[in-house]
Image (cartoon, rainbow, N blue to C red; front, side):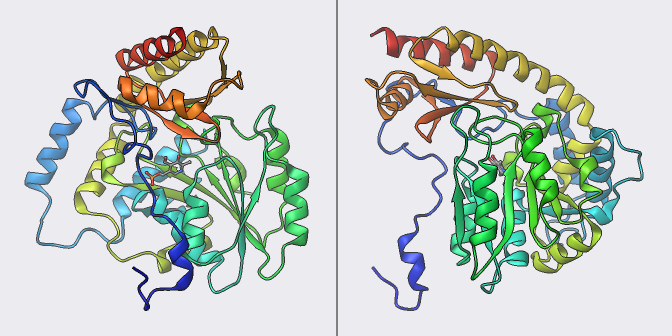
Amino acid sequence: MVLPFIRSDLAQFSAYKPHPGSDTAQPVDSTQIDRLDTNESSEDLPLELQEKLVWTYQELIENNRYPDGGHEKLKNAIATYVNESAHLSSDTFTPVNISVGNGSDELIRSLLIASCLKGEGSIIVAEPTFSMYGILAKTLGIPVVNLTRDKSNFAIDIQAAENAIKNTQNPPIRTVFVVHPNSPTGNALTTAEIDWLKRLPENILVVIDEAYFEFSQTTLGAELLQHPNWIILRTFSKAFRLAGHRVGYCIAHPDAIAILEKVRLPYNLPSVSLAAALIAMENRQLMLLESVPQILTERAKLIQALSQNANLKVWDSDANFIFVQLQSPNIDIKTINQKLRTSGTVVREIHEGLRITIGTPAENSRTLQRIEAIFSK
Ligand SMILES: Cc1ncc(COP(=O)(O)O)c(C=O)c1O
């Protein structure tokens, strides 16, 4: 039904589907479903941290009170982690450089509101990339300019990007979104791409999404100091295993943070989510040392094993997922995806390929067996 009081352009959009395809193919044996389609961690928090969170909930959190709307404690802990992880001195970034969001999704929307709304700007994204930049921009009526990538390494077509910036008017390009490393393709920004970002004028906001930083260990944190028009986005949803709590943050010049603080909702994060993120920060060594090396080892094993399959093109990855495409035109990626789903492994079909999250060793070996079984039939 068309609702006459709703903006006319919204009718053509579809809502974000967290698990696309789940309605078309169901696993036959529902006892063993491996959810490897959203790049979460397959492992929950270590038990001792779950217990700390339960204790915090019971002893410290007041359900009847609004959460801490200023996020000061968490911002402090994040600033310390950011400095440490970028090998910067401990006073480089401070809480004035941090804003916390209800997932980085909220921060993406706030950045769009702050930079492009009211017909003031368009955005650039290079496909394939994280879909939410385009989706959120369109719901706000912000035009999206889609660029392509080099087919041999998924690097952004810089010449096309420069032309788009020169030629896009009414409204001009205000914001460029890049992911480091990119999803779904897993490649980190190249030196040429970073040099291009450095050349962009100060009236263009550069959003560098480092959602997978803990796996790539490459950050543009140090460079951000020289570029007040850059903003780095990070999330607790991946390596920190807190996707269920919806916590993301950004690192930026204090003036940009002040604007984001104006745009966000007053109590954008529930008390339990703030507590979970703080516990993750305070116990970051335990959390990361335990899981990240295992994921990297498993990633290498999966890439190595799948590369033996002549039907597949397996791309290298700097993140906690891999991107796989088909070498043979006789097989259809949709069919492979549906067969994999039916056998119990749920992955993401995107850009004529499959993005497969690295799971536990058991999940990964099932993924391998199931893919091999599809091709051996
Ligand atoms: C590149 C990228 N940015 C942001 C997000 C969303 O993160 P959050 O859970 O913090 O909203 C994702 C989630 O998959 C992602 O891949």
